[in-house]
Length: 233
View 1 (cartoon, rainbow, N blue to C red):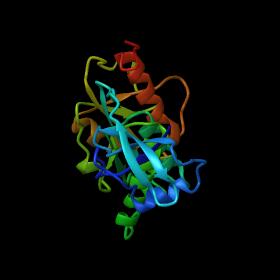
View 2: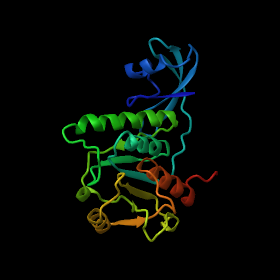
View 3: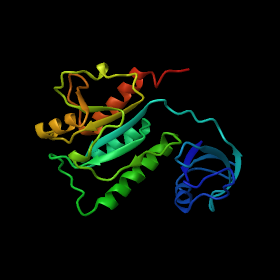
């Protein structure tokens, strides 16, 4: 079933929001088809689509939605092209709770003067990735942060290619992680010092150096597996 997003969705909903009706037009759906609507807060319900053109609905059921016991937060440095957006998209598909854009020293991209528009774009990417991956929690995109504003929630992980610790040695019993990923040019020594002083611990992902678009998702996937969050019950 296709998933849709309505922050005001409930069992009494009878209509999709206008933006989601436009989304319907790009899908091969017919009257009587079942769809899922989530409010992004952990709730999702199955509806029968009465009229795809207008988006009218009829409530059918509320399925049981399982949630991961481990919470992830991604701090992603702004990067050139769409590499930071690719990182965000994959991280949301993997189930992060929040994403924070970071203006690092080596960030080529710059949001100054367009913070709200750029943040809105990230939030829309998060909405699309949530629906595509059929999740009921919408990752919150925070305000653009500087290095001094970054503080870890749970165990802080700073990804550094030459760090002495492997990601496999992270405390997998932790129930919350904040993962910091630098830009293409890497994290400066001063940034590393400030982040470690703030409570982040440096880890490497392996012997290879990953792009900024793939490092965060790789760390989330590794920690999800190591912590048992992906275990089949």
